[in-house]
Image 1 (tube, rainbow, N blue to C red):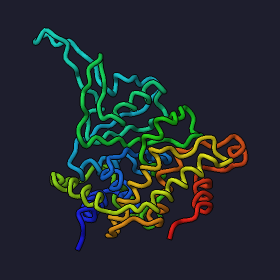
Image 2 (cartoon, rainbow, N blue to C red; image 1 turned 60 degrees about the vertical axis):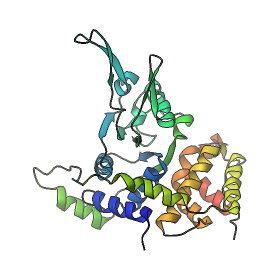
Image 3 (cartoon, rainbow, N blue to C red; image 1 turned 45 degrees about the vertical axis):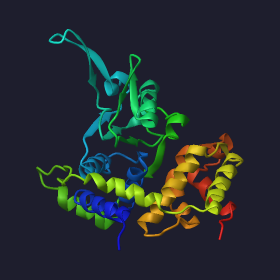
Image 4 (cartoon, one colour; image 1 turned 90 degrees about the horizontal axis):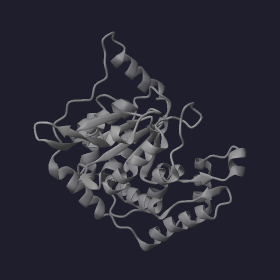
Length: 314
């Protein structure tokens, strides 16, 4: 018998799979983020379908989709909104910006300046924005999907550590397998072909609620908690890191492991579930030491060494 978590993933896989191909692991990662109410950072070269993936997710969830293009001259008010004078009412009225969406795609976020990047912090953490000392709540299902160019691209600004830590997970998009890319070329090679989000019936209101309730029923043992804490502690003491895993990051690992265990139909999470999610939860939160950068070591290498270093409980 399938659980509400598995039903939700099946629905998202089916709907998103109508327009994007070869991305089942990516859709599972997005399902994990949606259930955990976490935000997603997507990294990859241009042209791999990041925008279509985000639109398809919004369509599958039945939510309102908005897109922001990161540029150097983008201002915070461009995404938050502004007060404008309404002559018919004789007063200033707040006009909401694209931030007020169920799914917000912030394309090429690291091309936006630091001031605009920081404008997202309150929205991502508190799910509200403050304008002129007044707080405006965001939609309950508010989800940020931010795409990021590789750091060696020109005209990019590194995201601050405090903002990176607020992305629950990072997905690294790579070129599709040959068979999947052939499917893409066959589907969209017509002269007038244009990739659009699929039309899907609205997600039942209870679907997400039941999926989250099913995730809460997955047991986390004290041994597993201590295992994740040991990994976090080891990262803070690692000689190749100048910044290790935060408490928020450790919580994200546990939440994701719990959800993935539920997606697999298990009643309790195991160290294998932690290992299955740690590669998309931890690397973007780590800051390499200068010696590690000079030695060509990356964050994934450090995560692999942490998993090997910390013994898993039986």
